[in-house]
Length: 142
Image 1 (cartoon, rainbow, N blue to C red):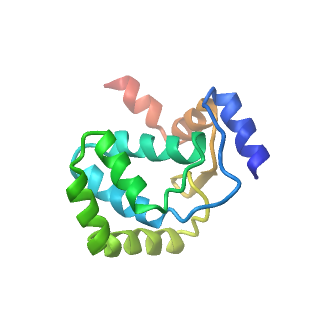
Image 2 (cartoon, rainbow, N blue to C red; image 1 turned 60 degrees about the vertical axis):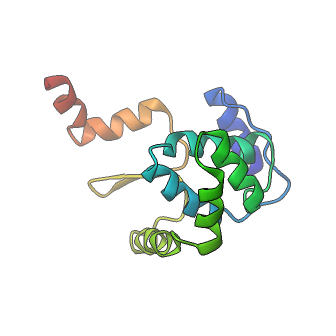
């Protein structure tokens, strides 16, 4: 799996180091939902991605997550409170339940009209999925 990830990262020109360990991303997912409400979701996701896949850091570590939140302009004390109270636990539980109901077992998974693409995909593969569902035509028509 690590070899496949390294190859995909190389193909996309994305830095990848990874870790010899797999860390639980559950708390990062909870904090991600909060960051999205604060309009910093993209920045926080990128920070967590870099910490894990580029720097090989333990994204299950609450101190690291608070540091990452602060690094993208989110209030660290609020991030610590979100993690301590597990304020977004139920929301992530609901996301996981929906994923299970849709038989999603890998990230990312793209589903359009019951057609799914699993894993990192080329731009062309995503474009083909959209074209097959009439999306490109609608975008170009507007």
